[in-house]
Length: 368
Ligand code: GAL
Image 1 (cartoon, helix red, strand yellow):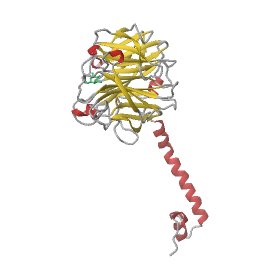
Image 2 (tube, helix red, strand yellow):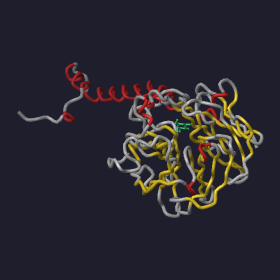
Image 3 (cartoon, protein in one colour):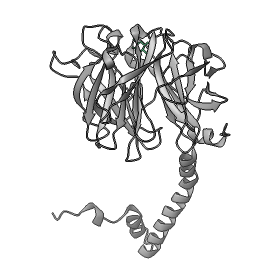
Image 4 (cartoon, protein in one colour):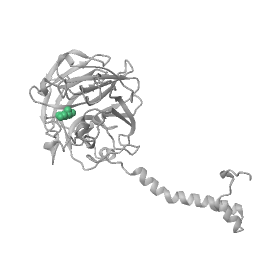
């Protein structure tokens, strides 16, 4: 029997027209009419969906475009030259042991900071048990910068080798040719021979980059410049917040002023945030107290700072990105993102059960 391609088969409507002896041309007009009416009926719904402000719900489960819960803790954000955002973070697994690195550093990609595509593991743990980044190592707070001069993407993270607890107190460095990787692990070391645990990178206008790291048993924060290729540190460093026991540093800049947000030192437990401002990343830094305001501010809304990102298209507004850790079931740590507003000589962060970047735009009143 001759095979009939499905596209050659008469449509249901045409077959009905034939059986009902309706003119085929009339039937196809009816078909067009139905199609247009269908579209008209759907249009308000489509418009509603497009208009619906996608909301950020701090502390809620956050799924990627593939439908999986985003697994990128201790976040580092990169706005790459391709205009897209890359979210790097600690990939955690379930249970208490899930805080150590068993998979590596994950990376997600987005154009709007709301819808994220999983791009896999940017830096996998090594299969070599002697590697610094072997399964069971501690790889925390990964941060990535793009070096415009070398064209490379450089990742820094807090590193403790497997089985060493938190005794190594080192930074690890890895490099890639593309923002999502794959990253090639280079080495680990103590910057200027000093302990380095919680850390972050900050890239200033003009490309000078800095490493901020909790040092001296976490009692004192240090800051040092990265070398021009971002693969190492310069020799000079400054001691900041001496004996203040601050960690979880996040640095941002507006109108020539630098801002610091960090936490106190209570492990996975939330505590009070600290804010500071300076006219140079190397200091001196002036503390202004707790930037979190309102209920639960003393515990930073049950979160700890990981990153502060400029809010797209809104100069002077930022997004506080924190972690709500779950040490007993590491994979279930949540993300607390909130709008951050400059105020006076400092800045503030207020709780919102849910908020949207659009809404933040509408209510934005520049403070300076
Ligand atoms: C926190 C730190 C986390 C992690 C944790 C381990 O203070 O900010 O990144 O190192 O301690 O207890």
